[in-house]
Image (tube, rainbow, N blue to C red; front, side, top):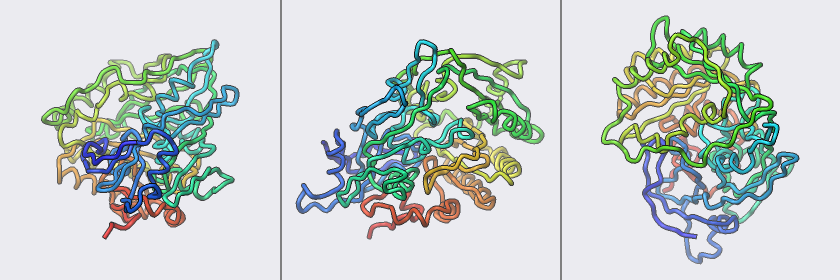
Length: 457
């Protein structure tokens, strides 16, 4: 196990960079020992945080000035029952590795698949649990944490616990979506999903405005397993909220090989300026909205890779935002006000001159999340990327945050870089139940920023 001060751990948005004392254990026992000073006489340990692939957009996975335990060395599969689909592996195993090992088609095209996956496969199992990630099938399968059967947790008091809904159930619920603050996840067991075909039928539908989106969502949620829409944030007036609605479902008898473990191409370096500008975003959005030409719909059967992981095709795609990086903003709006509030948010963005190129709108379903701080809840979720232009970007994000708060909504910590403490506290009613389960030896930049834990000194 190595230990050193490192400055190369930062947010995926490339806005936040910090110095950390990094340890890289290669075994679960070694990782657990990182949490205690038992074998390091006289050493006063700094506050600690576990980290995985570094795909959180803000500071939820960073611990500036403290310790990080890089868990990617915990990369072993423990067991996989191909009859039941129950998979156990260490916390540093990537979702891409699970797809490669466990999700290969049988002769009839059927197979096991991750029941829920976020928009990238390049995250670790531990990170997926700590952020209780969701995907395009939330309306039917809920969050990732809904499919966790047990997890192994190490804490700074030296304890190692197996947590389930029956054993240490409150700590189990606190750890799912608990932002890595309840201890270090060492391993987990999840229930995979059996599908009749690993390939998907995918359909894109171009629509002209926000009302059309809600009509398509209502029509699609029952018959289509995966749904989401790209939104043109530059559109105004009657075209406000126009975009392309994408929906997909598995096709019986059609197999699909797992996607590759690494992207086919990558951005080799950070350009000296952002390639996402006030000029390029409107041009891209207009071209993308018209990508199907005169057709309103397109349909195809093929791999799930393009449906689930479109951005994974380009490695280090976050570099295109240049040396100042970008902020991501994801909110959830309650169902009774979602139509008006989403329209208000899109209107503010369109008039700001800081339109997002990667904008996704989706409806969350009624599935309840198991974590005390899980983000998804019924309503609409809007996700946006904004190049970091300094004060003007912070001002815009602050205005969007105010609209969300006034609507009774919440922001997603895994995507956040600027949320106010009052916003977090108002948006997460399970917070008071969660606080007693924070491990006192753990901290993060996000936890300090939103006053989950106090600043040292």
